[in-house]
Length: 249
Image 1: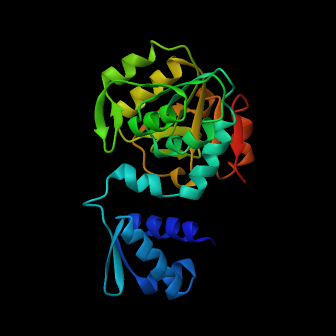
Image 2: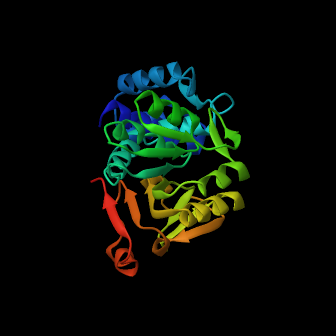
């Protein structure tokens, strides 16, 4: 297991337990105490955790939810983003939502020719524009640090573009084939993504499988591409034959 993969595991454990001991992490991840301590030192330097004698705490009081998600599952998200970016054709108009997974797509899009990117992520918009990509940042209210836009103004801006393909993520996905959100606003956003684009791609890390989600935005029949770091059961793929399933493994 590479260091980044170990740190991803540590962050997943801390998200669930908030505080754990070093001994607990050693037993769960099955690496030496020295390796775990080096990982914790790096996570602390990144401002993601607070270390104490013999243990570590997820620094949720000072770390935004987006920053946590951006770090969590980093290896998997990077692989998903690479597969997603491969769907973008030269000359396409592309929408990227404000999820942490779509942010990873930026570095894989900078060599595309003649594309236009519309995004509700101000940090991603700045990165793409600095690399010569024709980029539009949606309007809207900042709903999450450090620059994720939402609200009616953001959604209204989408109807002004002829979008070829949109990429989005969500709170959770269940093995009934349902894409879920924790909020009604999330459902509304997802439905409008579908309305204003020709193709819709859902980016789903395996950490989203059967996670909590109060509302159903879509089923798999409503999307064109499902991209994940884990394969879905064959029976689910057979049920939703119109969806293209892409796995990074």
